Image (cartoon, rainbow, N blue to C red; front, side):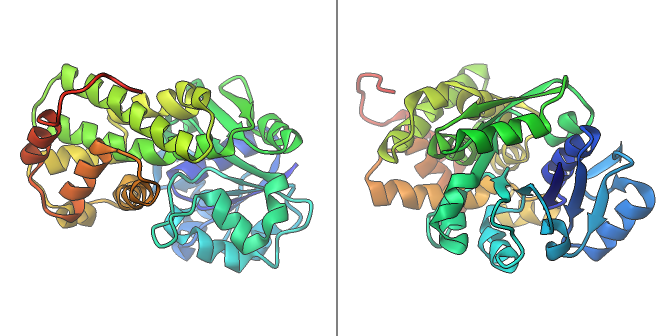
Length: 333
């Protein structure tokens, strides 16, 4: 197949590498002209996947039109907050039969839209019949190194999901399918917020008990929001839910957990973001998920406290005390 990948961050580069290694004609688009030239000349993305040599057949471009031209699958892996702008730039170049897939995880801040909603608004509602969202417990570096990893492709169209499944699956990278687009999208977006909370806990020096409680109650918040938006409960027990949540809350490669650790250690958000080259989607998602919960009237206390720490300068220890001092009640998931 001919596959275009839009976004040469760590995740986009890793997925493009999988596609090329699987024998597909793969074109990776990067925003930075110097990165395009570096990858062409060295076969390495030193900004986002240093020290990993990419597949020799992988090609690179700085032209959105070139990446989209003739693609059977166009995979979008840009930060969610710039997705609308990228799609607008691509809209005239995407062919009618192209499967539009995304591996971005987030909710647009201004509109509170998921990526499927953004695609529908920019490209027209019929695109949802060939839309696929990819999510699951996958650190990009481990995927690029060929370590066994599993993921799920969600689509309203089973044929589109199977096309992506067959394109990216290999003995090191197993892709499952799902028809719960909303559940797959929400699992990938909200887990980043909970991962910041888990990092804050670690940064404060709390133990495994606290982290396990945050993961469990965080999953309850994700499920609560998902139910309100029409997602299937079972999705959150799978790779796009519990699987991704556990990885992001515990793994040392998690950018969102790293942000939380530094917050717990006393750094400000401005100081943390100045140090980071790669985007921690949970920082923006904390604001958008908080807004979504308010709009829908959904109780999400962990998300609320992460939002207050990030955007209202609430001290982390005070936020923990407030969470622990809430009215006693039966456990609900």
